Image (cartoon, rainbow, N blue to C red; front, side):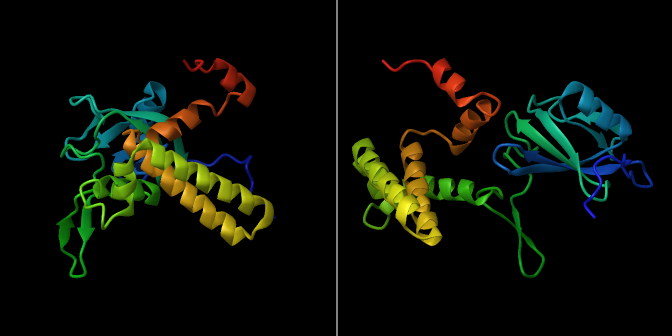
Amino acid sequence: MSPSTTLPVSLKFDAEGLLPAVAQDHLSGQVRMVGYMNREALEKTLESGRVVFYSRSKARLWMKGETSGHVLLVKSVVADCDADTLLLLVDPLGPTCHTGRPSCFFRQVQQDGSLKDQASEAVAFLQELEQTIQARQSSTAQKSYSRSLLEAGATKISEKLTEEAGELGQALANESDERVAAEAADLLYHLLVGLRLRDVSLRAVIEALHRRTHMSGHAEKAARTPHG
């Protein structure tokens, strides 16, 4: 039997009338923070389009970013299968953590249970790779392929992108799925190096794709500003 999509399901607030709510960047997938919502906070969030939590310590509603201006704009609110936890897909304006860091999740749990602050926050793999390439800029070219490409500049990186795109095209036509994945990985890596050269973030690329989601390809191309 397939799961029903027509029967209404009520949210299951706990004994204190609260639900945990996880705020996740809707483009990068990075978890920014976790808070709690009561029914009124959820209603305010849905009405305003900005995340409103319930503060257990202050016993009141508070809009995330109400003093800092670093609000979380709501793209979607989703409940889990048990209807007792919310996922807030958001567009964060500025850092989310009260420490000034982008995300509240940056403390690695050690084997003994102690916590160690990390230089960067927990991110999805592509963001981690992007950060690694950025870090390579301060290494020596002899020890870093990424650094050598960045030092060589746009012409060399463009040549590699053309080369890797051609190899991917050949793999798509004639080679195994494993080769397609490997060649696509090579192309994606060199793309990230090129973006690093121009200081263009992966998030900016995903934003550009997101803007085109509900636009036909022909209309999107026609709307682009001509070069030159």
